[in-house]
Length: 240
Length: 87
Image 1 (cartoon, one colour):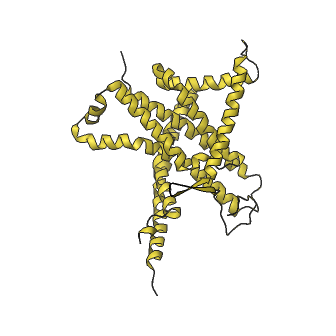
Image 2: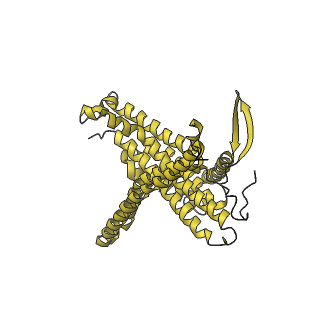
Image 3: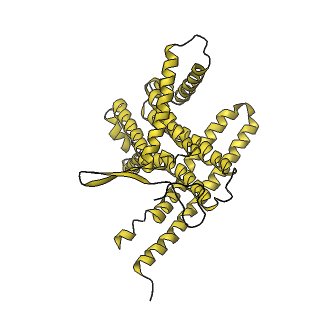
């Protein structure tokens, strides 16, 4: 299989940049290492380098921050403000996790701008994120409502039990499909442009990248995190 | 000669993939109306522009979901067709 060649001649072959790179056998099944694995590795290395640099800077923290410490404090403040505006009192328990997935999904979505295939364009990446959200929602549901977590499904009228149940189960799938569909459609559009219009695609695809990768990616990140926070906060009863 | 079974399944999958994207009308209309209300709200209260914009973007991204469901079905029918294996 040919590698992604951005200046390939147009027409016959459209390359969507998904290749199996390396396969191995385990328990009788064939598993492939694909471009998604490599892309996730690169994204995680980027985030790790940033985190280690931030750690080194914070250990020599100054009263009046300058340079890199400024950037780190700005990022942390922005994430804290976002979580607190949505969750209020309970923000302290969730801001670590929400901050982490915000940074991960943001860098993953934007990595299309730098030539990677965004790892979130693979349903195997977004579905676990949605399922972790689902587990978090149900855990907090049971923790704060104890047995009420089950009887809440019968709440307005017992006849609505199937609808409430489907509403609960649909949450991880709608969250993951929204992120997956947005990023994948951006990837497919850009692959089509680079494959079919390769002779004249000089310079102007940058503007499409700004819309599909940066703008759409940032909004989908914000929406994913906001919806996670909103769903979790809904399950926690308000104390007077 | 006639149409083979596989040809019929592929042709109907292609037609289905095209029809699935009629689901794109909904988000288009809905998000346009939401953007109009957002613009009117900014006109009435220019100081709250940041809050109005983030609320509007959040609502629009949630409304986009059903359009994406149609796109996912079209992609599945075109690229990972499960119906061929059942011939």
